[in-house]
Length: 129
Image 1 (tube, rainbow, N blue to C red):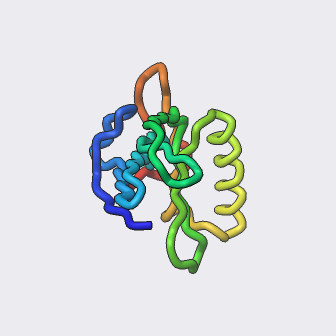
Image 2: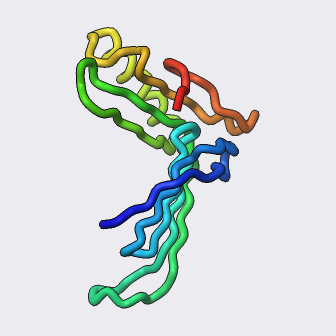
């Protein structure tokens, strides 16, 4: 599956470096904001034979986002979170892994989208992407 990545302004939080991925073999685009957790996917719908039968666009509310690296590991994990419960569970999980030394606080963050204030809040670490 081929993909071209670029940046776009997030429709939810206006972050100028949200990820825009275009999957050119499928004709599908995906927006992922690793600051607020917003995600959007749009592209053709295909039948079992691969014939286009329509178009689909789905947007998912961002409740927050998380990034972490395992201590001494290679690579990192980025997660868009879509419910307040996911943010709360991720906070507990992150603190537990920071305390055990499995994750460095210097390389992780957890954010929460404040719908009332229309802004991203840091929960753990500092958003640094």
